[in-house]
View 1 (cartoon, rainbow, N blue to C red):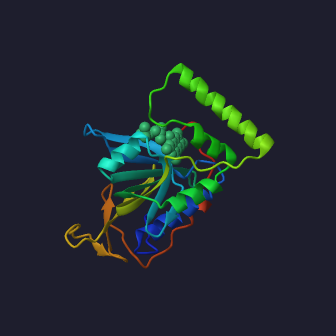
View 2 (cartoon, rainbow, N blue to C red; view 1 turned 60 degrees about the vertical axis):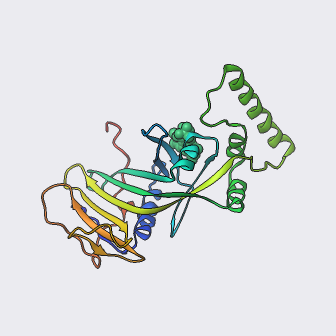
View 3 (cartoon, rainbow, N blue to C red; view 1 turned 180 degrees about the vertical axis):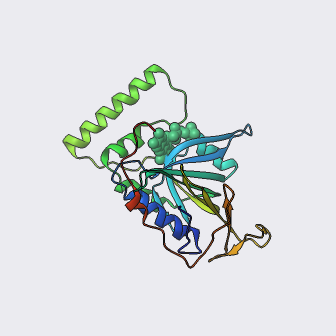
Length: 251
Ligand SMILES: Cc1cc2nc3c(=O)[nH]c(=O)nc-3n(C[C@H](O)[C@H](O)[C@H](O)COP(=O)(O)O)c2cc1C
């Protein structure tokens, strides 16, 4: 049975270790793919896929166009959520699931960091960022125009080696988490959840709450009937990478 054993009381450290394991999967499952949830002006939640482009001890980095719907929504309400899910096959042949849910507030990254990130991107991604119009309804003519600009810029890059500058409106955002939940599931056994909340002095008072590092508190949830296993000192989980097998095509 897989339970979440905590090598650290800091959820960002645990995230880094799960993410590294997910990334070392030989099948390209795009482990950096995640769902970003924002709140629409009409009160409906909005979710879409984005790529996790950077990570540090304080949170998660993403890039997009400031005219996009998500960007506009975050300007009004900077509270957001992220969901990452990794599905793999264990050495025993069972399906394994890992999910990480995050809530927090989003802030802008400094322009110098955005420029540096853009510079590090491959040319094709730069060209795409330059020509794309995010979240706007476009006519057939505009679509053709975007395609034409795309081809033209690609040719210029290939033939004339022009340097592509970071376009206006290309922004980087940083989600600073206040809640991170780790879910370890398997189809043929029980599921395990550990939730961390930033200790702001008045939240998270359940009995299962355990003290963590850097202001975090954690609580352990069981998805089915069993006694909660929660041991900070126990670190006997096999590395994730050892459990990964080719995904079952029928799944
Ligand atoms: C696998 C995948 C990765 C994506 N990554 C990004 C991303 O990193 N940044 C981005 O702006 N849009 C990304 N998109 C497109 C978004 O899902 C979305 O369609 C777009 O950003 C417009 O969303 P909005 O109108 O809610 O702002 C990605 C889509 C897919 C399918």
